[in-house]
Length: 634
Image 1 (cartoon, one colour):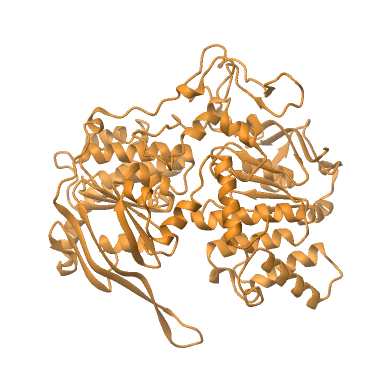
Image 2 (tube, rainbow, N blue to C red):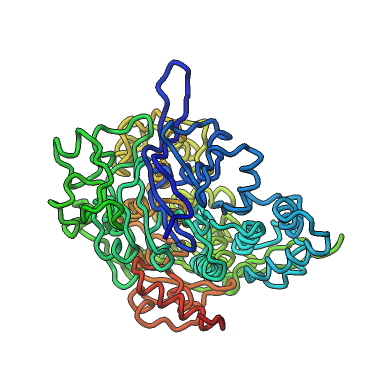
């Protein structure tokens, strides 16, 4: 079958200065997508996935870049690079549509949802009158399974949930009846249940419309049951391509194998997670030879360090379905990949004693929000009558969908917000009965790691000052064990470069910034560490290294931890017990093994069923089951 989209020798370059060599973040990428085919493009942040998508859309010049002289991109046999900007504007949305990662920033906040769908119709279906356009817009919202689409036409984006906003983006993308849909990390910020619904929807639409889909992601478990083929990208190049089932059954490139092994398993508890050492190189400082060789456990000089290996078909035939770019593909065994080593102190283990560090009794929190109309208000219950105990040395996982009350419960636990009802006791002391100064002193022993390190670290401060700030606030800076030498030891402990204290947060990767946030929380040697979705925005490879680090720190310092997440595979690895929250209530609380072996509450079962696993057969069975429950015929 002839290809719908053909990309050949794609090269994206940016000229930073006239007297400098151009930076080439994407080099020599070639691939095809057939009509109705679903293809996954996988790789860590910085691998060039989004730039590849923008190049297909003809948007690289708009961000200050240019394509290489040998690059060719054709759609349906037509050369897209020969099209004028006016012609490309018609093609965007009409033949190729794109869904971006964050729907809230992609939708216009001052326009109603219906108006934004109609705008796409006005561009790609001229000649329709207003009544026809509104009817089609309502039908599109209905096709993406939005409830009460007629009413949603008059809603603003901020009035919709994250999953609903993403469905609106899909409806807008479908308005021009495209042949190819590019979805750039469309589920990264969504809960596992909403993520499953969005992927099921894209699968359903692809089948119904014979729509080709290019799904970009960093998580191989997400695309396991969705795609026909997978393209793996690293350092601006394709390093492996294969049919989905073949790639998951037998990955041939070390990078692909490590990405798969970095995903915490859902069916068992690992003693240690496999993590990819180091970070992806910057485009201007890529190594000689294979771009992955500095991080590859199989790297060998000179085979891997002199020339970059091309993407070579594994069976020797041109155009073969499987290909990889590894000079040692016939010599290595990916099954020998081992987890990261554990430190000696961490290997000694941490005992959980019978002493209770934190006790919550009938804790509730309500918020007053503006009601409908010009006057009046409504009360929203975010946390509803939650009671639990947290023992010393224990790691408690709290899971649930967005809006279930997880983060509100964590903030009430630390008394960052005051509960509406109930009590919080920390080490036997009721936090609500303490004065401001007493509570401030006690907070040295209670620290929190937030979800987004970029927004929780002051961009104007160097890392050394960021780490010292809590100690200065509490008058501890300069005392024994609280000086620059101690901060340097802490930097080494969280595995950051030695010169980190003199650098600014923007000079680090996302995973490194999260390590800075962890180090900051440990400067005062707390007893309780609350981690509020600390890895949800990170690549799967970085998640594993952060989880290994937290496990080491827990054992080394005897920390008591609360770990909040919506990914059950993460809490299985790290936590002793798991609590499931739903609509503000703690609906289930069990040991980790018991919860996975025998979930009782329906919502717990729903979360487990929606959690993606890196197994195409399992994921396809799950999707079939979900569709049968929804009454959708195959």
